[in-house]
Length: 430
Image (cartoon, rainbow, N blue to C red; front, top):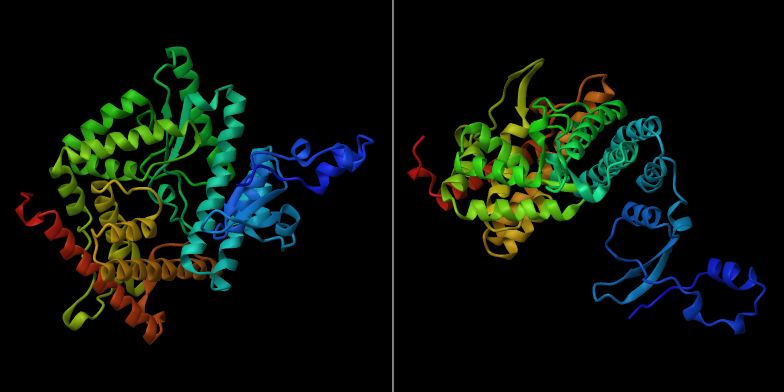
């Protein structure tokens, strides 16, 4: 068991600096405790951000059994180029102004094409993008909370949708909300609502585009007390209109970025309980995930259509990404496994035998391919001076890429069939 760590800095400051001989002090008097540890598999940008947030310069690295196998220092991590996510994460954490964060937002945008051109695996790429966007938003909220004098235990700033799942690419508009402490007085609640408006404005100033559906903390509908959120969830679940289904699905991906995380977990448990008590709600959610059938025609050929200037276009989000993320979310809600991104959810559903092992593997591969193709297409659009989107031009794909896309869409089709059977969708009345 690790009880503490002693560094050369401790010896310089606590022994030599104090004019003592090393034999006059013991390790227990000098050590820093408790020791911060990370697993061998932790990404380096996470290690650097942990050091920054904890005010430490080293972390102990442990294996899968918890046994220490090494020490990682901040100087080890900073021996990298300017565009490394590790250094960028540290700079974001140290930023003290919105202007500095706006510069870092642009640096994140510049980093993404580098990751793509270096052929970084898509799961790692989206994890890095999500991690840095999280760090930017969290710092914005921390700076704004300090300006408004609101204590972080009195609220939870949550992200929803693709950011809640940690699956962002280049299109990163705001999807967020505030959960407020029930004990706030009306005056304190007014201050909190003003804080929510200020957060939205600050995020816009940094560079995050507004949500087209106004799912943002400046919208009173997405800034509520905890009890009010519970009542709203009850309405969404028991009255599954198309609008309520959309909002409930967005909310199911909630994740706390800043503030009182316990309130977020409490609401997730409320959603689990409500969903378990209303099978019609889950069936309607599953049905909603089928509204875009995979574009496959005779003999499994990919069907294209004119989309803007692209004559042989395929909208990757509608063609398959949406069905996988939404369908897997519904299954995860039913089985209380919403934590993590869609890849994590697929793995967990496979582990508990909700999905057959081969289906879980095929779904993860299909999602990875379509996300990677979408990101490469978005970077290509930026290189040509265009706007990033979800549409790929089929004629620009190699024969192998067309085959992989066809296989991915066939996997989506099998997921549709699975969801229809699993939730008995043929028995639903429209």
